[in-house]
Image (cartoon, rainbow, N blue to C red; front, side, top):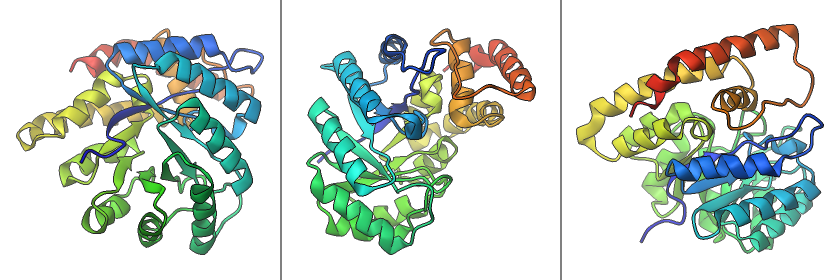
Length: 299
């Protein structure tokens, strides 16, 4: 039986105008661009979408916009990151009513929490919503879920169907491959995609890079489906690593905004004023992208 979440999902930015308001027109245009490139799944309001900035009212607008833009053409996952279970549940119910295929549940942010805390939080949210839940392991910004804790949640909470693991490690998805083979194993860190495909421990990817380079991520995922294409996978992954070297010069959503503007997808606006050094970096990254993006997309 096919798993609920498989293949390439683009982690979508949340475009905002110069006044800081979500620009739903630019969002629709970006989704149309990605659908035109063959992307059939989206992740909305995740880390790439800067979810801590999104108010509940804005979240409702996001869900309505994405649902209208994708109906009959693509699926979407909704990030329900929050600092409390009550807030996450409320967002989860909004996303479910909008037609989200699944919910991405990051661990509560800001404070450090124990594995027991994370299990209690995840269980409470999963039992209170009807839409299937993917745990969202994001240890760079929240308390990380350990592999055994993840496995236990999947085994004991029927509504938790797998994980989107953005840690960069393959430990959790490898454990699930051995002991919970029906669970969805979704890679959330672009650096880990090719290694996961080689190891046979990935059902899909939620990719920030695919937001601006869908051609490259789709080609990597397709090459990873066949051992005969191992050399092709290595060559494409080399291109991806060059791109990520540039992307990592800024916080990931900022870098994707810069490259998105370079592809004329949306104006790059930021949550606060850029320093002079950041402005210089932005210009350098745009110049690099202008020179190299054709090679990145030549798949």
